[in-house]
Structure formats: structure tokens, C-alpha cells
Image (tube, rainbow, N blue to C red):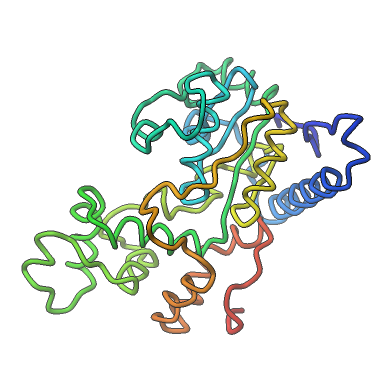
Length: 298
């Protein structure tokens, strides 16, 4: 559906002798192959109909014919800035504030089009997503939403998590929902009877972007963001002066969530909780070829 088996924007003839572009092109082919093989092995939805729900996280850039599936905590704010510049809505990514990116409604979503508009774009536009190591993405989301003041995540998620999982919680903690511990957050995540629903910041990429249903042309990784992003911009023929921004969008004075920081958070869990967390994100680990983050996982 919506793509040939290995549909990638083709390298221009002058790029074929460029070893950097050739190697990045091969990496893309390999990522697509692994994703497709994982889908055919584990998923039976290759004959399902694509509904507006499946494309609700996909942003549309009509000028350069790009579809971008938003995966939070994997560079999405900066990708939206790039799409706005491509669309002519801003002249530089530096000029666009965080709130403008997320609450300005400048970018169209694919589910806002009718059936014909959705299918036309799926069949003719370059579809891309960027992902991140699942445990790292999870810790990044936890730090962002629970370790900083937040007037949505603390009352909505924090209160429910503390009241369900904290023994002898103080009245203050129950009232504000602030101060959720990582261990409590993981208890909530792994609970089949969660006291509050899932959220896009820690949901599976599988669920957000439906990569077994929608055949993405380009799969980028947060770990090689600059190289992958600028290769993608090169492939779609973006203006040469447009490069992917390097700045950290939120809490910019704080260190990015690294492998080391992620391991410190997961060290707070029991081996069984680590294993269950890995099982929870198993399809994302497999589909995007990330290695096991801890030696003792099976």
C-alpha cells in the first residue's frame, strides 16, 4: 500500500558518486528492510484499511510534498519548525517559538483531509518518521513532564499515579500530583488497569505511526539526527540554506537525556520491572533495530 517495496526518493545522478550520500542511502534501505520484515513476521494488518485515525499524527507539507509522522521526544518540535519554513510560514527555524510550533495550528494534519485527499497524499508524497531508542525516549518524556512544573501532566497523570501507587502519600502530593517518582511512573505504564489512559509521549511508535500499514519512505533516528535530517532535506530538494536546528527545545539549560542518564533511571527499577518495560516496547526495539539496553534482558 502507498509505496513500492523500497520506495525512497532517488539519489540524483551527481550524488551517486558521493560516498556519504551513498552510505546514508544504504542505511535507509536497510532500515526499511528490517521494518518491513518485522511487519510481515508479527503483524497481520497489511490488508487493513487506512482510516483517519491511523493518520492523525501525520503532518502535511504540500509545497515539498512531505508527510511527517510526529513521534514526541524524537526531535518533533524542530521538525515542525523545518516544515513551517518549507511551507513559507517562517523564514528561519530560529524565529519560531515552542508555543507557536505546538499550539499555533499552522501545520495541517493528514486526518483533516477527505478520503481522496488522504490517499492522494499517501500515494504521492514522501512519508517520513524519526524515532528514538525507546527507553531513552521514555526517560526524556518523564523528565520533561514530571520533573518540571506542568499544569496538565501533574493534575491529570500525577494525581492518579500517586493515589494508586504511593503508600502513605501526603495530602499535598495527592492535591497537586507533583513529585511522581520514576518507579511509580513505570508501575502506571505497566499496569493493565491504568488509573489514567495512555499518552502520545510514551505510546509505541507502532501505535502512533502505524508503520506496518503505512509504508514510510524514510526512517530517521534521533541518535543520528543531524546527518539523517540533512540527508532527508537534500533528498526532497529543500533550499540549501535550510539545515536541521541543533537547539534543545525545552529546558535548554538541562542536559539532554543520554544513554547514561537513561541507565541511571532504569537502575531504580527491579530486574522484573526492567524486563517488563522492555517487553512493553519490544516491537519498537525490533522494528527499528535497537539493541537491548541492559545485559540481563531476554
